[in-house]
Image 1 (cartoon, rainbow, N blue to C red):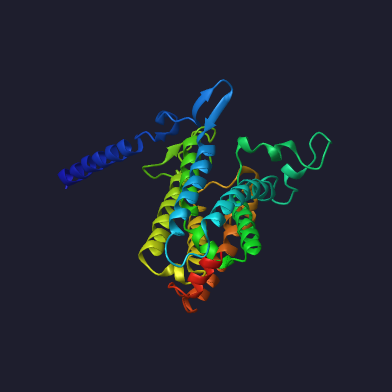
Image 2: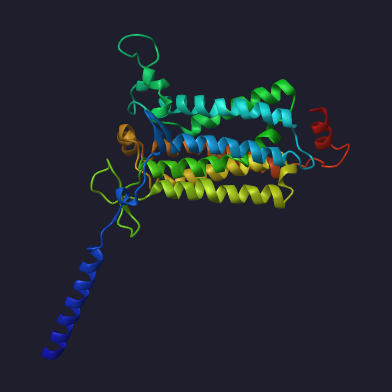
Length: 320
């Protein structure tokens, strides 16, 4: 019996030592990865990765949209793609900035700080115009893009839903690049965690956190991009008005809702998340999930448009 107890004690000591060794493993420090928020600096000018992500996302969307509309049954012509390139870019920047100011500045019940007066002069704070300081809202950018598409389709008498289908396929690339830029900047970090790949971010204390920027880049960006690309190029989904944009909206909403469980709420809205049980991002995502589900169901229950000469899609392209 004594020998058995001794062996058990020895085994317990070994397990304790192994556990201690696991706990002693150093977390990943973001600062050790050698990243910086800008690509290069000339004088006082810095080409920041966040700005570069927006630029590359828009350029990719324009290039890929130009390829998409060369396929049979496209609902718009190249000149419409050129116009959408300008207006959607404007919508992303203005809508994203205004959305951030409206949803994410100030506290849970206060007036957004970016809309308050600055030094007692004017009705808009100077901070609202400082887009180079960061702070963009996906939901605000989405509204800006929808308004841009609505204007172009109304002006040129195009199908709003089908143009949205074509635009939606390209959006996840921008999300992918934007979230990678967030990670590169060491911002928008995740909640506390004990996972092996947890990281310590600058300005977030000596706390191991989820690299939630990478989660978002993977789900909201790469995964959704692959799904929509396959649907467009490998199936007849583009002939069902609303299907692609419905799947995009539903997928983006669900991915964002899940990712918010790992992302640290904005500091000024932490009390809001505690009081309501969900973060601001999750509350704003619920209407997206509902809208995406409705549009998707609508699309799959309707007859697909034609794709040959004389069909509705073909004639629409010709008159465009």
